[in-house]
Length: 324
Ligand SMILES: *[C@@H]1O[C@H](CO)[C@@H](O)[C@H](O)[C@H]1NC(C)=O
Ligand SMILES: *[C@@H]1O[C@H](CO)[C@@H](O)[C@H](O)[C@H]1NC(C)=O
Ligand SMILES: *[C@@H]1O[C@H](CO)[C@@H](O)[C@H](O)[C@H]1NC(C)=O
Ligand SMILES: *[C@@H]1O[C@H](CO)[C@@H](O)[C@H](O)[C@H]1NC(C)=O
Ligand SMILES: *[C@@H]1O[C@H](CO)[C@@H](O)[C@H](O)[C@H]1NC(C)=O
Ligand SMILES: *[C@@H]1O[C@H](CO)[C@@H](O)[C@H](O)[C@H]1NC(C)=O
Image (cartoon, rainbow, N blue to C red; front, side, top):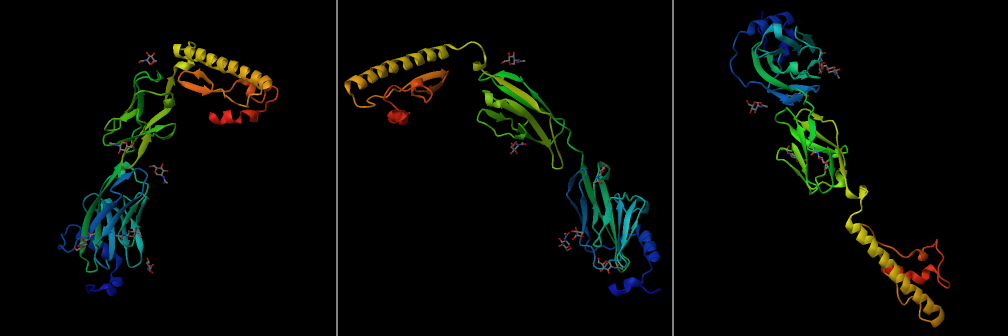
């Protein structure tokens, strides 16, 4: 038999002889030339993703490729081999049904599982029947375990002390993100995160902080969110007792309503009987309804539903209205 030379002659190499050559050459160290390199994309894969074992720098016009599990060429660990001359792929004993061998020597493994973690060895049979061998590695991440969320107290009173939420996870090297009502948490000034993001401190707590919190642990491959934890913030106005401030506000409010009403009564009297120009004075009324939340109001008789004093319309008070 004549040794094949050049790409044109490779079609004439019988396939059986090629296979024999491949198995014989398994134990033969080829002369070192420009070695192919294997690049795993992505290098750290998540379970269920598809991974490419890219074969770079393989020799030109090879006769075929063979991929094996493990760090060496072992025919019992053959995944598949590819014959360039007729584009034929032959599956080996450890072919899982999730591998595709491309004509350029690249191996695609789809829907990877943890059991795919390990080494993969490529054997390239060149057109001079010499071989190139290179090993690549695949690491499949386990899915991130679901973190759990704890609060120092799930029912707290507004402005009273801090609330500390702690994200608990057994995973190392995960990053943690926070969610509030299903949305990525926007950090208010009252909120601080620990340097590793695992604890969220809210101090002082506000009624706006009421709602469901979640934390999410993720590594480069996958992520997992905790069950929601509901924080309830109660506040003083909800309780039966009115604060001293609120009572004071109501008293002041009543006085502020009554005083201008007296002034207005006098004004109306003078307007009717003394011809005083319209709207010489406008009542500025402050009725405090809620502690710390003053609300400006006109007396009821200026509203549309109350009868206006004789000779007046709402427009008579337009200049007053613009004051407030
Ligand atoms: C391919 O081989 C050449 C020369 O040996 C080298 O310069 C290049 O970096 C290699 N490329 C890859 C992707 O390994
Ligand atoms: C080989 O072919 C596959 C499929 O076409 C492609 O995704 C991959 O990038 C190729 N490999 C190289 C090293 O170019
Ligand atoms: C092998 O595939 C290439 C394209 O990938 C095609 O050009 C060629 O004709 C195919 N050869 C055979 C024998 O099917
Ligand atoms: C991926 O593999 C898992 C088992 O490992 C299987 O349950 C799932 O259906 C597979 N998905 C696809 C798209 O093949
Ligand atoms: C939780 O907060 C409420 C209201 O501030 C308080 O009454 C209760 O004692 C707190 N519980 C714990 C365990 O700190
Ligand atoms: C903490 O979370 C912020 C965004 O919420 C993120 O930018 C940062 O990288 C995280 N830090 C760590 C150590 O996970």
